[in-house]
Every structure is written in structure tokens, then in C-alpha cells.
Length: 535
Image (cartoon, rainbow, N blue to C red; front, side):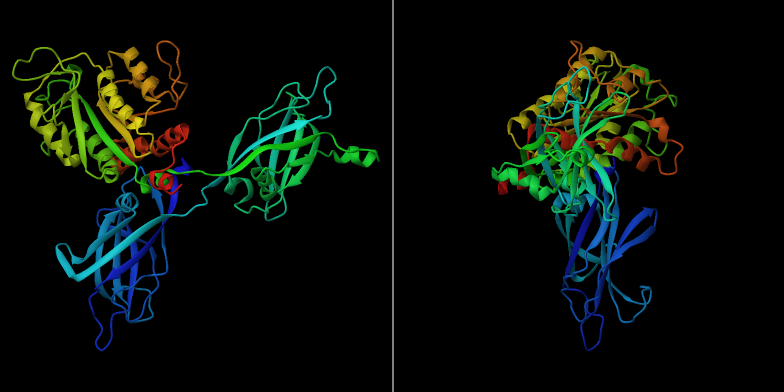
């Protein structure tokens, strides 16, 4: 998942800083710190010091690795520097603010009042932070074909493929892309492919590229048909309508035969520079992530009044269900501007009649407005309804998946990348409607949504692992495969013995979401909202 770890650059400015110097203004510097647990903060970066300025705009950018799946608690602290030491203990503190990196990237620009300590403002001082992703997000979309390639096989034509290499700074060639093999064809057309400019040529359009055309042999002893050198600049001439073709030269043949012309001609069928958007492009471009929770209240969880029950609330008011909800919800809530989350239960009988079990009921008992305010609101609703429910069954997942799918389907009609949906299902794993759930997931894989399933308790969770589809592609009951992988399953017990269980759990279940979001919008050909508005 390295592609979801992104470098973010923060630029900082302040207004109305406290004046700590007599006879002149403060000489501010800003430090970026990250929380490593409890009251422990580690310094990540600092700006330059600006002399005599109460409204500084710092030139030095603060760089930080951004991980969607983690709550990264940051502190920005401003000091008045009056000496040449790097130790800040002997410098005057002008105020600071604490916030998460998620809050900064989802808002793009955040302004906060500076505080000397909790609830003690630093005069009228404010700090403004703007986030920018550091990257070259360009890619090349390339389609190649060849004519009259040399025949290399005794009993048939050649089976050609291309290999692209870039020249490293040390002069060596590094392989960057291999096409598919076209069987038995001396005039092949290869499939169109995307490759990031960073990968293809280290973002240097004039860096030498070498293309080898070879005849594929199943034993790995591929025969070279011929080679040529080029550059991204030359390939991109095809985008302007120029004919871009290369003689494919076999060096040995060229040496032996004076009349040798080539071993075929490879040409560019199409080539264009495109933008490869990342998760942050979508979030910072205005895409909202909508979070919905479904909680399993089926009988297999045990009577909530019994300490053996998975729903039993310990003296501190917690249990595994709430632990999992806090871990995931705290990360996701930063990306939803209204912080209103629909929360549902399933598998319980409801007051006052306690008749049939409900497979999708509003956790706050308000079906017309099932929204809870933040993760705290979901926890509050859960604690309020738990004593009133009668746990029952069966355990049906498909109703809540279909519910979120119908909302995301409406959002998909808008034909823009402004909404994405994450459904969190907390369950003890005893699923009854496995086939209907498979079908619901296959349908949902074509919609802007991801499903996270956290297994609570000691069950073996075989069915959940099948839904995850990591070992093979999940298919519907009629054999239709998922359009993309949208389910992530983890058992809660896996994290009970690690040093920071909540952090480890949220990282594990949320690590796939950025990739899933990007894959959906790429599948639909949708740019981030702000980028689309510009074009």
C-alpha cells in the first residue's frame, strides 16, 4: 500500500502573534510535532525564523508522510527565538494548536486560534495551515504497434512483446514496463497501457528510453527481434498527430549484413500525457466520504446483561463493538464535513411489540432521521437502545448493504466524484444470507462504496474471509465477478495483544479505502471535483 503513503507539504502563516520582545517585535518560528501516544510529541520539522514580524508567512514548508488509515495528531507550536540554539526550552512560547492531518487535508486550508494552554488563548493570535501533496501526478497513456517483424519461430510466426527501460543516473538501463505477448503475429498491436511519468522516465521527458522487441519463448529464453532508443518527448509527438515510428534494429544482424535495414518497424499508435489522480486529489478536490455503521444484534452475541455476551458493557462502558467503532470512526469522521452518520442495527426485535426481528433499524429509533452526530453520537445511541432490544436472528447483511448501495447509486447518477460511501459492519460473524450478500457486494462493486467488516468475538469467520475475496475473486450466485475489490475484513481479536490496538485496527481496515476510492473514480473516468471544474 505504499501508493497510499503520500508526502504532504504544509505551509504556515500566523496573524496577531503576541509581542514578547521589548523595543521590537517577536522573531517567530513554527515547529511541527506529531503525537506518538499519551503526552509524547516528536518534532517532524520546523520553519525558518522570521525577524520582527507578528504576522509571518513562513517560506520553509513542513513535510510530513500522510496515512489515511491513521489518526495523525499534530501540534503546530510557535516560538519567539532570541538565541542561536536549536533547543526551544529557553524561547518564549507564542501559542500553538492541535489538530489532525486528516482535518488539514480534507479542508485544504485551516485557520485556528493559537492557545498558550488549553482554553487559554494567546491574545488574538491565529495560525493558518495549507496542505499540498508533493508529487508528479502525470502519466503517459501509450499504445504501440509493429509491422513486418522478423520471424523467429521455425513452425510459426513470432510471439512478440515489448520491454521499456529507462536510463538510470548511473547509465544503466532499468526495466519499467513489459507489454503482454501477442501470439503468432508479425504485425502486432499491443494493448494500451498507463505508466506514471515518475516510473517511466523519473519525470524527465528527455531521459533516454530503450525499447526491446522480443519473441517470447515459454522457457524464458526470449529471442531479441530488435531494439531502439527514444524519449518521452519523442513518443509524445504522436499526441500532436505526427507519425512516430522506429526501425527495430538487431545489432548482430546489422553487423553481418551491409544491406540490413531493420527487423521490423515499431510505431506509436497513440500517446498522450494524462493526470493520474490520487486519493488526496479527490479529498482535497472536494470529495466527501460518507460513513454508515451497521451493528449486529443477533442472538449468537449472547444476552447483553451477561458478562459472557459480546454486547456486555464493562464498568468503563466499553465492549469490543464500541472499541472497533471508535477505532474506525475517529479516522473516517475527519473526511465528512457534516459529521452526521447514519447508524443501523440488525437482527433484533424492537419495543414495544418485540414481534419479528428487524434487519435494518435506526440505532436511534428514529427511522426518518437515523443520523448520529459524530462517533460519540453513535456510541450514545448504542448505549441507549441496548437495554431495550431483544437479540434475535437471522443474521442478514444484504439489507444494510443494499440500503447504502441505493444511496450511493443515487450519488453515482450525478456523474462527478463528489461522494464516496464507507459502510462499517460490526458482527460476530454468523451470517445467514450468504448468497444474497454475495450478490449485493457484486452489485455494490460498481458503485462509489467500500465495505469494512470487523469480526467481534471468537468465531472462525470463514464466511467473512470468503466475502473479502483476497484469495480469489468474489462472484455472485450467477458467476458474475466483482468489478473491483471493495470488502475488507479483519477479526477484532487479532489486535487485542498489540501495544496500540485501536491504531493497529484502524490502519488494517482502512488501508485499502484510498485505493478502492481511486479505482472506482478511475473506472468511471471521473476527475476530482475541483480539477473537473477547471477543465
